[in-house]
Length: 234
Ligand SMILES: [Fe+2]
View 1 (tube, rainbow, N blue to C red):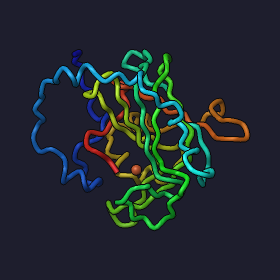
View 2 (cartoon, rainbow, N blue to C red):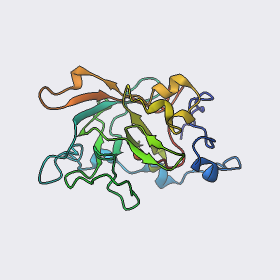
View 3 (cartoon, rainbow, N blue to C red):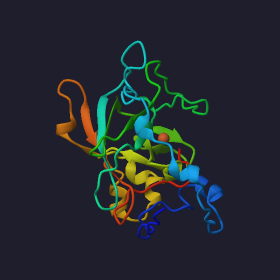
View 4 (cartoon, rainbow, N blue to C red):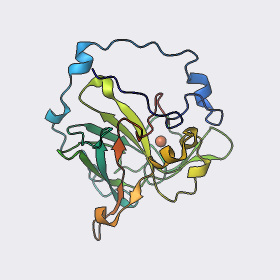
C-alpha cells in the first residue's frame, strides 16, 4: 500500500481544541501506534458493485415531500494530482430543515419530519462525480458552550477501494453567519483549509423550478486535501 505524506501542518482539525470541549476528553494523549493493515482491509470491498441507485435522493422516502428548501449537492472526488476517484462510496447524513436529526439522542425540541430520514449514499461515476438531491439542513443548538449553535452542515463519509480508506468530513453553506462562531470548523487553524469545507452556490447545478444547487469537491490527499475528522464529530 502506498504511503502518502501527511498534509501540511494546520490544514487538518486539531485533535484537542480548547473551544471544542469534547475533544479535550477524547483526544489521544500519546502518539498513535501504526498497525499493519490486514489483506481484507486492503482488498475489499468493491463498492462499484453495489446496487444503490435511488439512494442519492433523500426527498422521496416518505408518502409526501419533506419540509424545507430542496437542494442539489454535487461534486467531484479527486486525488492529490487532480485525478478523479471512480467508484468511491459517498454517504451523507444531516439534520432536517428544522435542525433535528432522526436519532434517539437528539433531544432538540424541533419537529421531526415523517418524510425525511436524513441519510443517503451514492457512488462516484467515471469522472469522480457524485450527486444528491436533499433538503437544506437547519442549524441546531448543542451544549459545547452557552448559546452554542452549529451552522447548517451535511456530514460526509467516503470509502475508497478498501475498508481502511474511510474519510469523514462536513460540508458547510456559504454566507452562514454561524460559521465564525463554530468551534468545530474553527478547530482547523489554516484559513484556506477551512474554505475547502465550504460549498459554493452554482446556478449550473440548480434545477429550474425545482432545486438550488451547491458544489462540494473533495480532495483525498496532498497539499490541498480536504480537512477530515479523526474522531467522530457531532
Ligand atoms: Fe451534525
